[in-house]
Picture 1: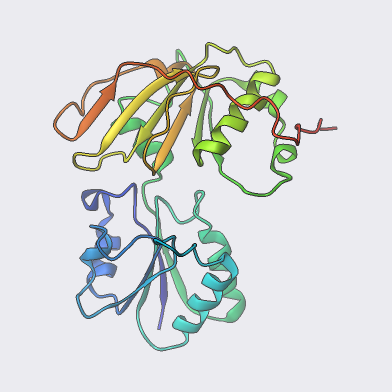
Picture 2 (picture 1 turned 120 degrees about the horizontal axis):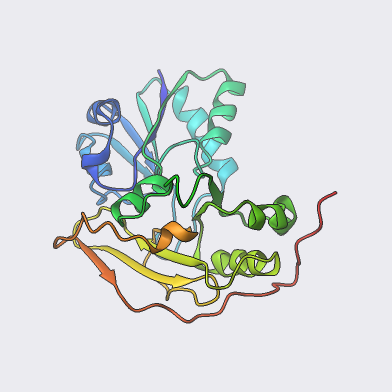
Length: 265
C-alpha cells in the first residue's frame, strides 16, 4: 500500500487540509510524534494502530533512522499508513529524510502539505511576518542538535539582511541563536516574540521581549519571531483561547556556548 507523509499543521484539527483529514479517516496505521490523545491523532478510526515515535514520559523519541526503517517496514506491510508530521512535512519536520528513505526502498508514498508553524503561529499571535514597509524578507531557522550548527549559517549576513526571522527550535537553542545574532551586530533592542501552542483552545500564549532580554520559558510547542514585525499586535484572536502577556522577559542570551560561529569565506 502507501505511506502518506501528512502535515498536521500547528495542532488545531480545524487547520488540517481536506486531504489530510480524509487520509486520517481511513488510516490503518498512524505514526506520530504526538500521543493518541492529541486531537489530530484522534481523528483516525478507533481500529487504526497508533505508533508513537516522539518523546513520551520516561522514554526518548525514536531515533530518526529507526523511524525511517519503521516506515519502510510498514509500507511493505500492505496497510494504509499515515505518518503525521507537525506543521508541514518538508519544513523543519524531517519529512524529506523519510521521503528519501521510502523512495530508496521502493515504497510508494505521497506528501500532503500542511500549514507550517512558522507561518501559523505568528498569524495567530497577530504578527504578519511580511509587511512591505517593515519587512521584505522572511527567514526560517530550524533547530539542529549538530555541534557544527553555528558554522552552517553566515550569521553576519543574516544580521545584515534584516527582515523577519522565524525560529522553530527549543528554548536553549534560541538563547544561542540570539547570542550569535547579537555578536554579528543585530541591535539588542530588536523585538522578539514567543508564541506557545498557537491556535490551541485555552493554551495559546504570546510573550514579547527583545533580542537581549528574551521572554521567559513557555510550554512547547513554541515559535519565535525576531524583527520589527514582532512588535505588531493585530489582536484578532483575543478570545478565551488566547492570552497575550504584556510583560517582557529579561533572560539574557548565551553569548558563546563553546563553539563560536566560524567565518564564511
